[in-house]
Image 1 (cartoon, protein in one colour):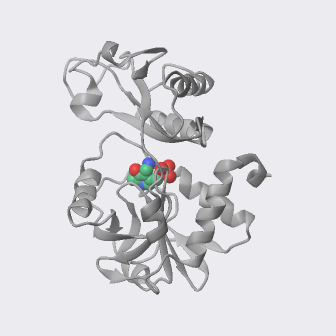
Image 2 (cartoon, rainbow, N blue to C red; image 1 turned 30 degrees about the horizontal axis):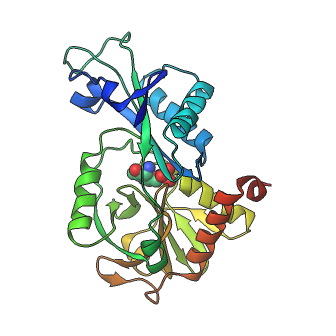
Length: 283
Ligand code: PMP
């Protein structure tokens, strides 16, 4: 495997990560996962834009410009001959003697490497079950931080019970999943939590809203309760790896008629069309 380390692509064996890296000790850093379809990164500009935004929010300056990062990531895809999967990239604040506060001069460490996975077609076609849990995370979920402890605890809980995802509830309202955004449809109106500090504004979420605009399908960025979620006609979750995935059960309760919803399936096919020909859909 070939890995980008700051501005250089090296063999995996030659990557050196220091044990005093603040990412390792504090989770002091940020990340992105971008999808690669047929050797091309999908929505790469949007992921880089969000990466820079997260970096700015926690006060790290990336070691390269957005354009350099874009071409470096494209080089990682090419050098690894990656056709299907994703690129994981993360940046930590860098290496320093362990203490909570930091000197501004530390050099950030950027790495990017390929992830090998394919589309989860079975779950996309058949739908999935999810659990719910109190959203005990901090209030800056808009930052794509390396600190994912509660997310992984709750994803593992779902996994252990044979569910695909856990959906978080904060102050009675549905926020998002551990690694997905949540949408519900009632009487043909689609709702999803507004893009504020309590969710990560998913690239897939934004793409779905864009497609809804194009298709003149009504939606609202408005939060809803767990009860409204349970009473929905259709529920689906979105993410870079899941795309648009129907949810058939929430906490063992069946949603709608218990089958992947018509609008959900239509949105997924619009999404798949966008992957193949983004410029046509964008116009
Ligand atoms: N929310 C959280 C907490 C996530 O980790 C993710 C995955 N990055 C998402 C939502 C979905 O975002 P995206 O569509 O950009 O993958």
